[in-house]
Length: 326
Image 1 (spheres, rainbow, N blue to C red):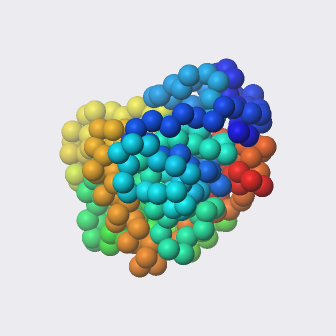
Image 2: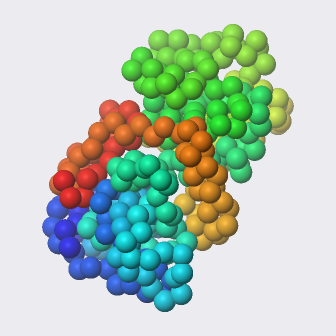
């Protein structure tokens, strides 16, 4: 099968388009003919060998995708050949076929195309888990989303609005902020031009924000932490800036603040019911018109390295998607 191949740990530009054997199908698993795959920052970490999980070399990277079920393993009853599905995989989405556990496969909601479905599971799944289960965001609370124009940032805005929060979107360009506005953000902050902490004080009348959703890290995370209200929660989603922040524990104590880690992928095995319940609510929000995934660019399979470079360079707004057949 055609696939993007990682032969050794290194930068994404070492990835090659080639051929890999079709993956074996085991009990409880599903074989999917992949039509599209989402591009995630975690793929860059994965191919460098720095991810929490390390596949055996050589392998095809790619953590999520969409297509049709080809066959199912023993014990699988929820899917059949021909079903349109989206899936979360440990690796292998950048290939014509992928095999994964049936527990991480989901039927594509009515009206959703393959390109949208390929970019849906990781970003929306992360935001839903972070806001619902980790932050316990309540209606009427204030949510600050850093990196609001990126793939996960936009989904956090939509999930926050679906939960009834007031959402403040913070991003580095006017273009990204307009995307945030279109997704329902109540307030916009361009942190390349405005003082983030000072502007947050004005918006919240000096009270601070209840929850920070942070996929960026670095100095922004430090500023956002100091802008939290009493009993505020900062969600550590990722480090797109490349800088892992450290937080002063005395400040956390004085304001009763929580720094909350979000490793969404681990829920596949540690809490599979929570993992699947999140998708049930997300599917309902989609049906209710509360979610509007933004796929900014579709690239062919041969351009996976280019897509990952765009993501690391923070040149992408919304989600990038790979067309496996394109």
